[in-house]
Length: 148
View 1: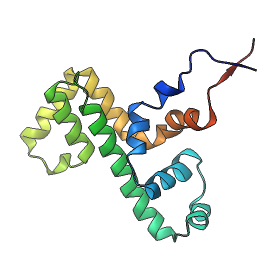
View 2: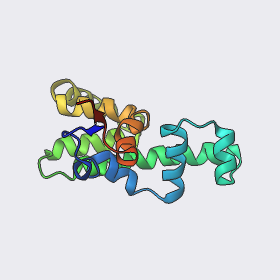
View 3: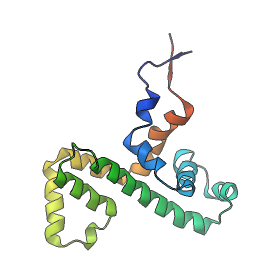
């Protein structure tokens, strides 16, 4: 079996998603891994982690919120990110858009209309935990193989 020359684990490990995932607590990483990457049923995760389903539901919601927040911090901390884009992305991550004034919501919507970067980030943010397997599995399982 020949490994793909295009997969670089040292680069993948520094991806925004990997860094955000690594910044979470061990319990939150475990919950996200079992539920969102491995897609284990809630009952099995409860057995593995010694938690009841109510605790898991509460903690997974917090874990997903924390992942979104950490992901945004990683995105916004890039020196290439314009200040307005960083501020807009942080507001989207907080999920508190409904708490903003109508003028602020209109400003964010206008920005998303003309800034493709922020529009893509907003879409990614909405589905971040669904994309964890794509971001994380290669770091654990290893690079894809190619046939020679």
